[in-house]
Amino acid sequence: MSRRTSLTPYLLIAPALGYMLFMVGYPLVEAIYLSFFEDGGLTLRHINYLLYDPLSKFDEAVRNTFLLIAIIVPAETILAIVVAVFLYKSFRGRDMLVYMVAIPLTISDVASGLIWYSIFAGNGFLNKTLYSLGLIDSPIQFLGYEYKWREVMVVAIAEIWRSMAIVFVILFAGLQLLGKDLLEAAEVFGASWWQRVRHIILPMLKPSLQSALIIRTLFAFQIFGVVMVLTGRDIPVLAGEAYWEYVELRNREVSALYALIIAGLSLAFGFFYIRMLRAKFLEVGR
Image (cartoon, rainbow, N blue to C red):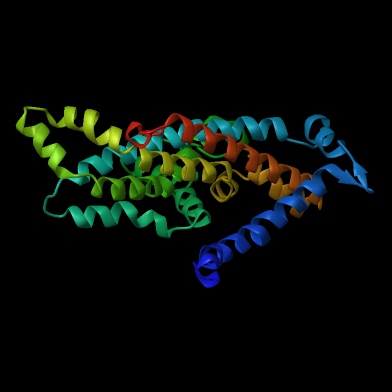
């Protein structure tokens, strides 16, 4: 084997390796240094600030982030599976429906927040519609510090509408790779549509579902724009507090610590999905 041939694999991965080192590795090392080192030595001052300082909303941010994830990710996943399986069948107008479902992918989180703010604000579209129909006498308040659970609902609706398309596109692409011969054989043997979905489609979709959940949960830990537009700091979240510490309080060390926490949680959930959703047909020979 020539020297040029032996170096080819390393040359091919060099761009990706360089990207990981400079765009991921360096910021990670810098964040660790900012979070745990001060004046040349180790420090826990920033952790103590997160846990005990009256200005810190760390505990509330963790609860709110996990609450939104617990609502948004399962709802998006179930909805995406239902829509993807429904659109798996060929029928007139299917392609148009696929494009319509994927449209929110083109909208930023801030724009999505503004759209839903115009709907749920006190003088927004929803209240005006309900009032014109005679269903209410005064506006229903969905946004405001005293209406926290309504704000959570509005944020969840806005985020599900915006990002369900991510999960849908991944699952729908995975469905296109499934062999229709299995489904046709099951239909010949009398399996109902639900039985085909349950015993053939869903098990074979596990690799796509795994990828969709990892990507969606990673983005869910970074939820920020929709929350800030709709609620400000009424509902603190981890990414929002990282922004607040860095921009408003000029506390880059604590902001870096928030970033490390988000990264650690994302990695932990990614590992969990990889372990729990491994498809059996990918485990042959293990």
